Length: 139
Image (tube, rainbow, N blue to C red; front, top):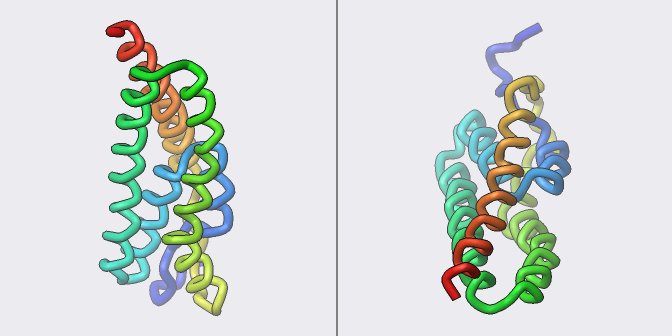
């Protein structure tokens, strides 16, 4: 039953888990939506900065590794968990802690969000691979 005084949020722990599979871009976006629902626009903006930063990271890494080598491409893919960890520590942890410390909330449905996450993960990997291949073909 809906309670109008409670925000509707996606479970932050579940978001962090799904971000392992899909990308930190996905997690940061969902966290931004949660912060907006909680009435925290500054935190929502900070999460969106991680979204934009993740997109820029993807483009720059795709171009950079395309110029230098396939070994570097593999190495950079191994550093993706570092990006996830950095996002969780520097941005995600704040929401995890905020909600864990006693916020009552209604659970937001994952029905449309998980397909969005899957699309984000596919787009992230496709973009990185495409940029690598495209730039590599130029050299």
